[in-house]
Length: 239
Image (cartoon, rainbow, N blue to C red; front, side, top):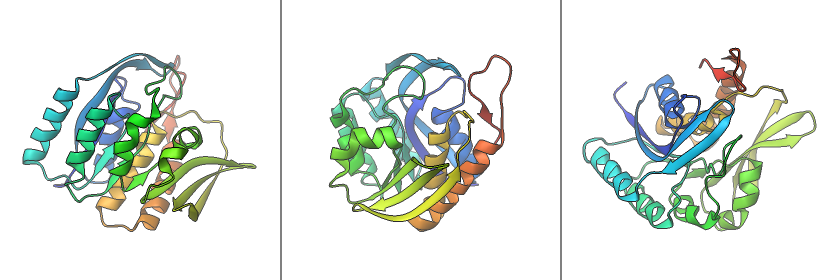
């Protein structure tokens, strides 16, 4: 394990999601993890109760100094910054790296407060991405911004009868579908784990279709292998 990946995302102090989950996933696939925090949160398994976006200048300095020494093989974007100008600078920097960029556009948590009210602030990050991985709600919010996106979209968790479906899309065309049986599990960090796994496979040299299939299969394993301790509202994956 000598190669590095970078996550630019939020911090969950309980480790179920955010950069701690991203780094755990990177490690699972044989990468060291580096991280820049866009937003700090106060949360537990019952949801996000408070949050604070980090200073844009500090974020950019963290990014600059990390990349000064470490040649990352890929970038995962999570919760975007609330300031468009900060996102523009982040996009400008990562666009020079010539590595895969996976953007999981977390606009609000599963339970708790909304992070991003004005969707236009994420536009620069979309433009800098190789793949954007929204769920159905995020896709509906961002649809107008994704119309001219030239990269790939992975639309997650599309409901289809007794199944949910992940779809790999480019230029409005569905290239591949993977179906999963519906379950009633509430497992933390599924979006983070999927996007981090997808990035890991791309960084290993897999094609987008191969990475999509492998990341979707990984998420089945991730959801299946979990535990729920007394007092917890959501489970933790052991993967």
